[in-house]
Length: 196
Length: 103
Image 1 (cartoon, one colour):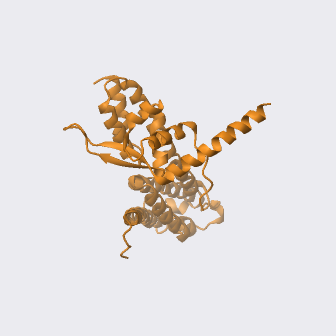
Image 2: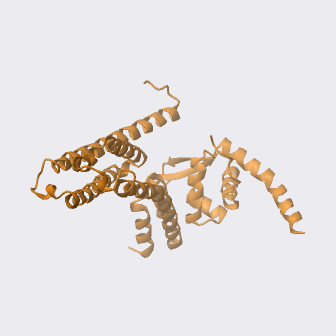
Image 3: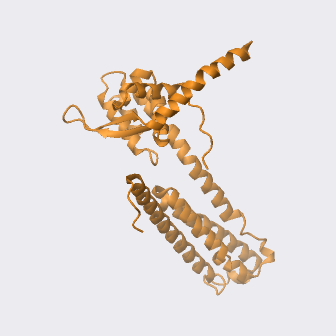
């Protein structure tokens, strides 16, 4: 394998979302070249890099904003203002779960190739928030430290399962919406009437 | 609501002109690169943008030589011709204004 072959393979083997056909187009033209292959391969690699940066920037910005809100943002209150029950019940607050569901639906519909990664990241960051709250609660209310599962801290387990469920349902609904949108656009492109 | 379309760059106009010269013929990426002098790193982002805006259409054509994979080919659309004509009409006026501004 030459250097040009390696660069071309690197550029086109894992194209950014929505650029698969363009990667294939570049690859087939590369196959037709008799000389100056290295220049063509470097150009393709540069084009792919530009597409990848643009494609990832939006997703990355949304993920950073959302994970910030999850762990540090709108749902946090000073621990001293809360009762132990409110604190431990925090992970089940309805707006929190509703926001989690909507964000997962939107992101999975926007980037279906990242649906699983989005759900896992959301679950992970929400658990970081939960664990952080739990340790704050233990310091503020030593009663919580009495046993491994206390009537108060058992709410955490409910919250964890609720959050995992919400993220999984959100990812699934987002994927369904994306598939439906693609089918609708394909029908529109063919000029056929929508049977729904 | 769609915003105003930005004036195409010289490279974009070169691609559109080459495709317009080919009339209704399909052109491959390599042919366009040779005709316009653009490198693949500039050509493909331009083609992708033109394709997304409906100024160019693309299609996988069966290979001329057996055993080769299908090749992606491009052709200008009516909207592409209109955009090219508009840009070519604006270009001399823009160039004239630039010359006047330079004095």
